[in-house]
Length: 100
Image (cartoon, rainbow, N blue to C red; front, side):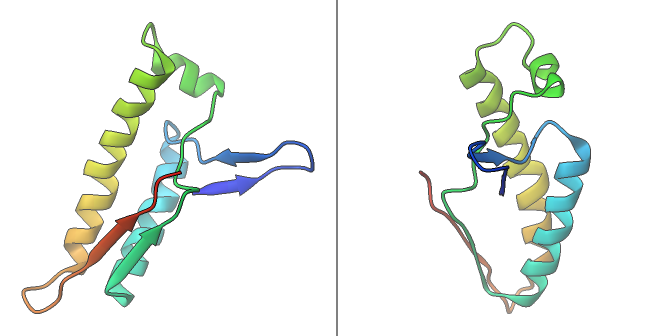
């Protein structure tokens, strides 16, 4: 879940602290889970944002601690919820996350 910046900016991740970004992903995952039996999130499923919102959410924790907490919450509240909606007793959904 990444966006490409201007030349020289490199690749930036979604801001997982931003509710609007989470909602966008929530909708994409729900739509995709209703169509396909398999979802793959490649190595661009990352979190390298350091915007003001992320810095406030980070508080006194390290970036690593903060990002692990945020991504755990994303996995539990965004992906698990919507992947559950895509499943029925007759249909299984496979989620593959390729880490960098």
